[in-house]
Picture (cartoon, rainbow, N blue to C red):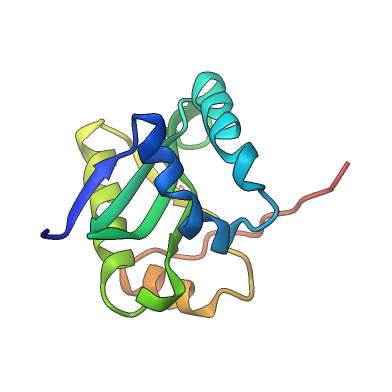
Length: 141
């Protein structure tokens, strides 16, 4: 099988992305993953794109939306390569696919947040010409 990037549309495709997504989102239980993805899809248009080469190598959860600050944008909620597959180009290929998808959908901007300790991810984003535009603040309720 050659490397392909696909959108996870069927339940079994979404579920096949869980082991890799769980590396980034370990707090999401396996049995809650599909219902959460479906809920986010219904509410916000969330989608999962994934890189497959025999098995899932990298996944990205994203949505397209619009706001006053950015106009129409693609926002990447989740982007992760399997730990055993990092530095093999899968994350970069998926990133490029997401940017192209945003352009095809006529988005004005492309955004993501990244936790401060994810230095490897930051190197990729900076190499892909992203800039650090601000600070993200959160408050757990």
